[in-house]
Amino acid sequence: MKRSILIHPDPRLKKACAPVTDITDDMAKLADDMLETMYDAPGIGLAAPQVGVLSRLIVLDCVKEEGAAPRPTVMFNPEITAASDETSVYEEGCLSIPDQYAEVTRPAEVEVTWIDRDGNSQKATFDKLWATCVQHEIDHLDGKLFIDYLKPLKRQLITRKMQKLKREMARA
Image (tube, rainbow, N blue to C red; front, side, top):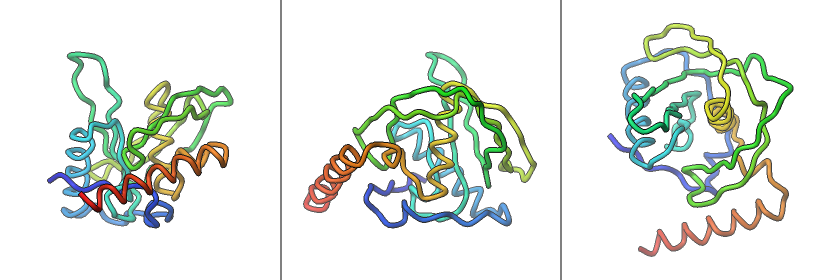
């Protein structure tokens, strides 16, 4: 089931999320719904707070090559356990901040641990777009948005555009 994506500014997007203590059927269904919502948007990552659920759950799939098999990834309680000193810059966007993009500098490579949909512990190293995406989504779980990395003026400009968009959406 497709879910509604919250648009910034929304207080739920600025809250730290609670760890998932048990992967219930409801949590597994939420993960499925989030993947469906992400693919439909279309996006490459989505965090539970973006659909109004304050739990530490993210989904991602950064496969973009034409004809390549999708790699839907579900992460409960993801945690960055190591990050490279080397950085990379990507132009980031966010489904909660539609049509706004900005360059963000992050570690080029990160090691992440998480619990998968079946309750198994996982650990992997991510680089390139996957590294940027997983860091962006984990930030959501801590109440941080990609615009929080920008200079105040640019951040305020984007926030005002989103407030205007929300007013227009409410009138429609």
